[in-house]
Length: 357
Image (cartoon, rainbow, N blue to C red; front, side, top):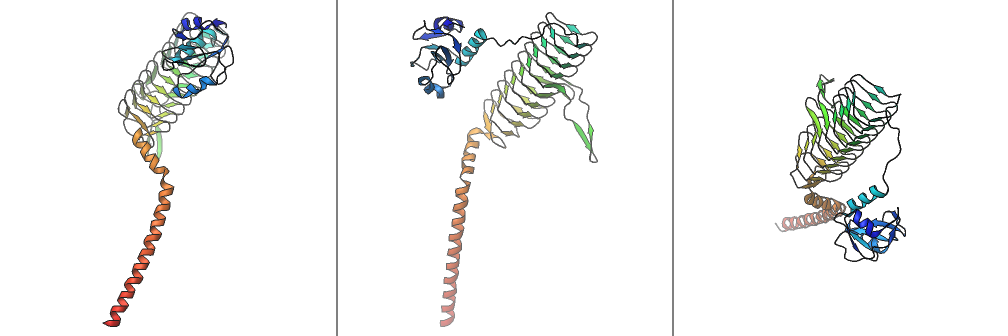
């Protein structure tokens, strides 16, 4: 890569402050950048690093009016930087193309144009795979499962029977889509399995991280809607619905039949009880335990989850408990001393009254 700053600005629809003729030969993070690199600052708390970075230019927001380096002003610096990375350093590792002879393809399987099926893949009967989709090594695809076009399935993914995967979906290694929902009827101490005969539907432009489990519905469907992004190690139970463009961060767990709205953020290790709803644009903070429905456009934290401002006040009080404990102990000692003094005084008065009575 070797481009002028002006050429880069034109590629990412940005405007220049400073010398647009300087040459850029690489892209890097603001702390790691060297001379010749371009970097970015999207979060205001990192603006101070502009004075320290060795980068030759910085992509940033219109809030920054001047800096010791030439700038490209972009509406969304993170997105602009990502676009630049995709243009100059595309992440396209070479891989086998075509249908590998070790793959096992069942009967009545429909394959689109330019489909890649790598070694030791199993595709069961009546499945379908859309144009330009890549199925990496040792993936299992169950019968009557449909996978859309331009989708990427990484190694060791299991997609069970009758599941539907949309277009431009990415599923990372180790994930299991369509495993049985956790349903048992307990009779006289014995747990009897309840059949899970529903399905899972993953709509277009969804990305699913590594080692995610999405259970099939008991009857209808577990549904992940368009544009949602799911981090690694997430558990999504049967009959859950997650709305468009939501974010589910690592180690979150969503219990059965919960409805998640659109543009919702579930932060790391959040736990959601079943049969409740999380409204549109809500934020559930890290490690929150949600035990009741959350209104739209709200933020909750803590366990049990409460409105974030209230949870912060409660947490502030909890931090003062050691001092409060000391204060209570001190007051108890003072009260005990006062009670002893009062008792002694009362005894003295009683003796005096008896003496003169």
